[in-house]
Image 1 (tube, rainbow, N blue to C red):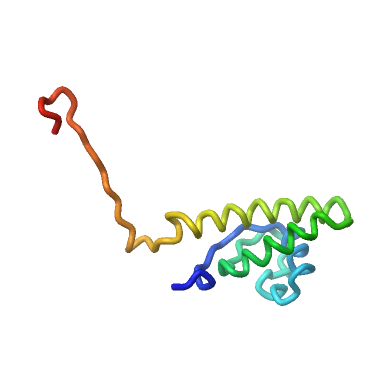
Image 2 (cartoon, rainbow, N blue to C red):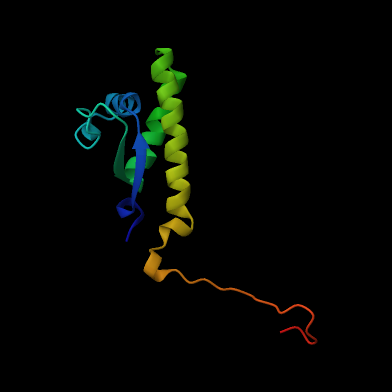
Length: 111
């Protein structure tokens, strides 16, 4: 699976979804703008990266306080989703390997 194919879900408010759609119009349909409540939306890692880049740029430009705040929150949400996609969360559950070290106290030699 390539980086652009890794899928992450993020919970976004209506204002956040509208702000993203204004920045990247091709994502308007997946953002489900017709829903009036917060909604979990799935994105590929490459889409999340594009959203982050555009939202960081847009926060620096003059816009309304509500839009700026939504974009700041979007940046934080996307950052967290990207961290998960690059860490242990990027490894499918079936392929993860865990190693544990258990020591019995007061044993000599340590077991």
